[in-house]
Length: 334
Image 1 (cartoon, rainbow, N blue to C red):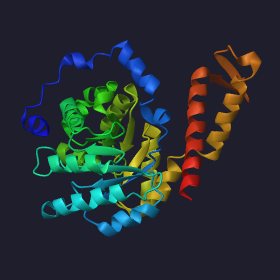
Image 2: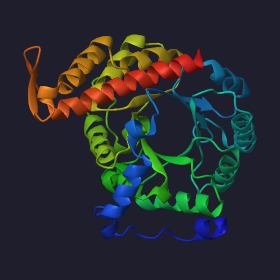
Image 3: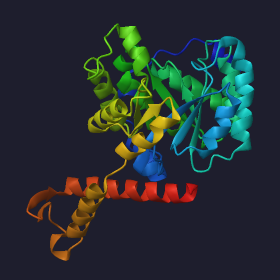
Image 4: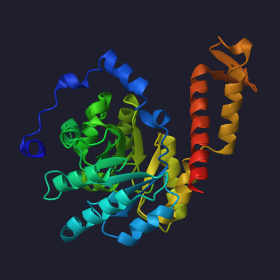
């Protein structure tokens, strides 16, 4: 079955797939709690790329405070080292020892000489997720999902999509829409800003002027289909000030976290993408105010002289949920 999927041309994406999912499908996804960070209970503030060919780095990752680790078989590995890297990564994932960290394997594209074997190996290793590179069309996700089905992959292996080409940005909504159906396994979009800059010929300015429209497009697509989305990497890993500024920029835009290239970037990233104590305290006040019997049916109330709507209640509950989840995760890793 794997060979059939690999050598068959991708089915053109049908415009009908852009339509909203049937109510039954939407309800099924909601009840199963498979959409988004608040549904899954996963924090993805800091997501560190680890070169799959570096056995020492794979071992060191067990002690790093990153929320998630991407064991990379693609860009970080030279062509002649890819088969051995696959073996090292799959052995590391099978052996475990990474605690509560989410483990992701980035495979090579299926059209490369290594892609199919990467996918088979990843399926056997059973990471939390497989990161699909160079996603440009919905069919790229659907094809990998069908191959996983053919391999009888466990249902708890999800898919992440690299958004790193102009075509991916143009098709962001259609790609995100594949998440409506559970069998497609999609739960997270990952921005590949370096590749986007290269492909678009834009200048890599400090304020990310050229990048913001692409980020915003992907963010609203992710939110429309209840997906998480991660910002691209910050290349100057020795510049903590610049990293913090870019993390703040990403959080302001609505990113759930950031992909990283060096362990020194983890702590600043975790700090920026965590709710501050002030934010948590204010969120708890909003929740407490709406729980008062006299406010139970009100759409708008006043808290400490500020107008607060029920939409702010939802935001407050999410803030508290994230803060408590981070606390539990850190306690489990201590």
